Picture 1 (cartoon, one colour):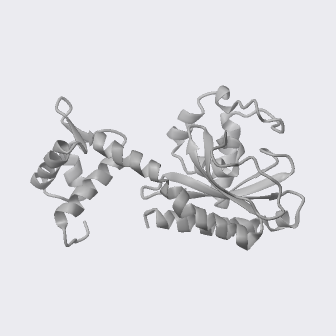
Picture 2 (cartoon, rainbow, N blue to C red):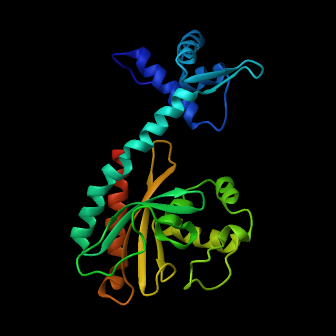
Picture 3 (cartoon, rainbow, N blue to C red):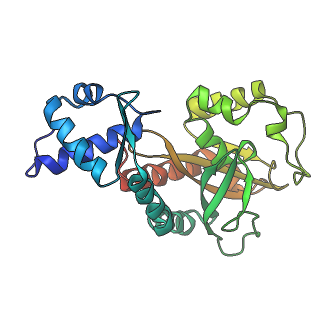
Length: 258
């Protein structure tokens, strides 16, 4: 671990971050080994965090997990909308620079939820207003985030064909299956950005890029939308590069791993 002027605080935060990155409660010895801390130190800090509700101890399993106080911190994070506050100026900058509309969304189940929407002057209205949900597999923001998920998590979101259903998709064509989704997401990983053309709104296309958090999880995605028959369509690569740069900057602002 890196040196700190306040080692106890640094070690406490490291333990909380480690627990947050696990898929379930873990033994204290595992925490000590992963963080290269003395076991006695880990036990003492866990005891304090347990008293304050940030950690729960499962005596039968001899493991520790996050407590209700940690959940309340997460809820506070959501209420303060830091993604929208930090991402809004970046999306606005994209819109000013490119002259096309932009938005920021987060993954919510197998939908995307839009947190920021910036419409460029003299550009068509979009369906991506703040608070709107759309199927993730049809959108550029959704595809960018889905491509960053572990295979097991992706499969859990799409266990069968019913997960792809969307009654409000008048322009959707073809049958969606898990195999087709995997092919689409593989192209996203190879390109480094996602695209859709007319799959949400006929005549409009979008490119999007993922925003990663400190553990490499897809926290959000930024996208730009333009008319598919406009000059912008011929410069999709350049638009994608600008979107990727904005997404990388937002990743840095929310503390993404370096």
